[in-house]
Length: 182
Ligand SMILES: O=P(O)(O)OC[C@H]1O[C@H](OP(=O)(O)OP(=O)(O)O)[C@H](O)[C@@H]1O
Ligand SMILES: Nc1ncnc2[nH]cnc12
Ligand SMILES: [Mg+2]
Image (tube, rainbow, N blue to C red; front, side, top):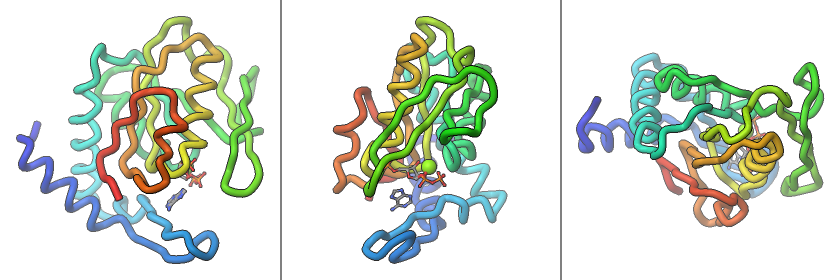
């Protein structure tokens, strides 16, 4: 595993390769797209290493990693694999088969729903929730609600990027760790 200086360099490299799109999906939003990092295998390896370095600091160790549909699915499995714990998806409404728990959450305009499979988390299980980016905190907050509905304990949330000005972490009822802050 890298020393802290190496890790800082890798984080800066990743940051330099997140493409930015002004006025997407609507005017005034600067969209930060983590998919651009996945164009380069060396950067993917760095991203994996950085995520694992942060996730392995979490104490007590988590027993399950939840990823949020869709971009959270790119990151969470790296961590689950390293920790040798299950990966569990939280998905937008209507995508998961079997019995699900649902929650509605606020978007900038309107409302959406997210779901989790009822049998995916055990009572008392310590969970890490992972996503690419924290903006208003609506998505992470909804995922926390779903995990708690199933009796899980959210130990922490981990995001690659945080839009600090939006103060989204105030809408997330647990410790949020962010790797890149804008
Ligand atoms: O903090 P919030 O205000 O909830 O915003 C953050 C969420 O917004 C994006 O997801 P989005 O659902 O837009 O796209 P995706 O399906 O590509 O992940 C991003 O991937 C985060 O999940
Ligand atoms: N600026 C942004 N970039 C990427 N995803 C987002 N989700 C909400 N705001 C976003
Ligand atoms: Mg998302």
